[in-house]
Length: 177
Image (cartoon, rainbow, N blue to C red; front, side, top):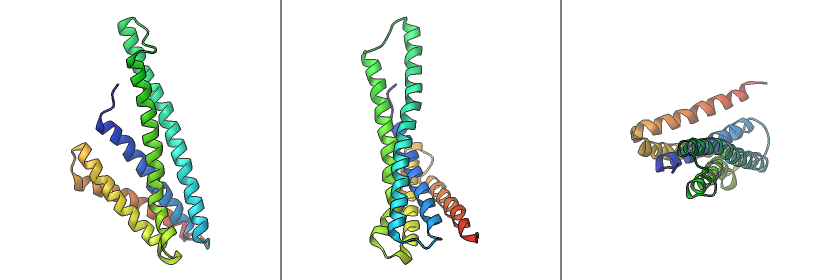
């Protein structure tokens, strides 16, 4: 019931990918319109806040089900109620930490593609946003490769590929009249 670094890393990776890619999708989709940077920032921040809350709450609900399911199995094997024991408190702590990691990393990831719109002129902000997102995905891939043991480069390439898929899919919105 104790989460290891790789398990905690999983929630950081999941949340950060969600934040970066979902908000990048919003930005790329909106960039085909005539809205100004202020509108893009507000829409992207709204999406980032929504991701933070939904991923945090989703993790809380899912981890509660898993952790308390495991706790029930241990209780059945021990023929003992573990409520208010160190084991139950540790399970509850894991649920809360998990929820904050997933939700918080979602919000932090969502800030990556937003930052260029705050500091760079409208005309090139979308390209800077894509570039910064790719850089963040490379770094996230390196982190993923470290905890998975599958290789840094391979993991970084996978992350960048995911980013490219999102950019291409959301750029398709520009093709419609």
